Image 1 (cartoon, rainbow, N blue to C red):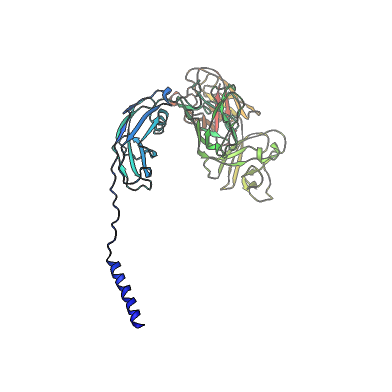
Image 2: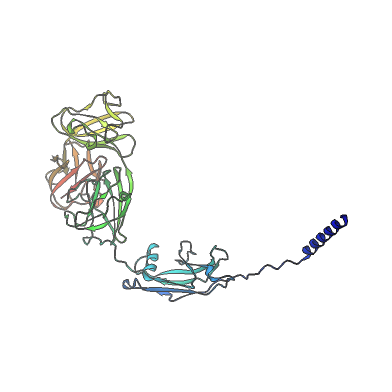
Length: 470
């Protein structure tokens, strides 16, 4: 028995020795591939608009000689501006093919996305990078330089034939009144398909665009104003019917609006938003939701605005931080101070009138000054000495006056026949500031034409004051 066990062990040992000495099979060897050679159907491409759906460029390349099945090989076609080393390339991925073609409109979109001008040839670089599907063994082809010329695509939305564009609506300084206030609600024409401007907009309201000031027959608005985020920009349309008004931003302030007719897109960018205090009182039914407001232009706790308090009633009001009674409410703290106490009395003025109200929620102080408004200037009826009184229009919440000017005449607005409070232009954009430039000052590029004019003063938009000359 013992000898049998020894014999088995001997055979096992010999088998292990012979197995260990057996030579392993060699691993397979796969040679590396090589860079492809790229060729193009043309090195100069300048299609016409009518050829947009035709093939403008065909690219062909050689096989990179990878050792495995060609179906596992990926080719990336790269196009970029010459001299940029493909840092901002436009790419197309190809498999199972050694060629690809581009329609004229596809190349045109690429060029226009880079910002190139219509009908101006530009030099573009083209190459192909090959690899396995997992991006291993990447090889880059030769670079072709191809001269491409973008053509002008008809705009998605027809630009105004008037070459002018105006803003109108409840969100604007002049509301839905048409004709609109100019220049405060007039866009600047950047080029044939782009209009932009910086405007005051009431929060939570709406607007449209007019190609002709004073004409409702055509306008620009949106197809669906329920689209989420549309207040910040999106698609717009030309309309000859009611359409849908464009929803404005939620917060009151100054906004830059850009309308791109080429692509039918618009953008709304906040320049400055205002903090508001609302002024509900017995003169308007104690309803904060529809009350006039005071604005803190710099969001620093200092508020200002104009409020018309008609004759009659008790001339009492409060200030609220929200358009309801759920925020911070400010009442009378005595001696020109504000109080947030629940039992604080109402703020009051002595009589009806058009009041400039200031409030400061940092120092908790307030004041109200009754104002009437007039025009004064170099025109004959004034001579910078005599005021031409303006009349308040309660329906439009504005002041109007009539003056006759000759070429070169200038004027300003002032309160209570006194220079203590006067408004002039701010940069020729239609907005007014205290002690601003004379309206009509030719050195400021906003001269007043000779003739008889109706002048309208708008002080009802808290934080933004403007005017209109007709």
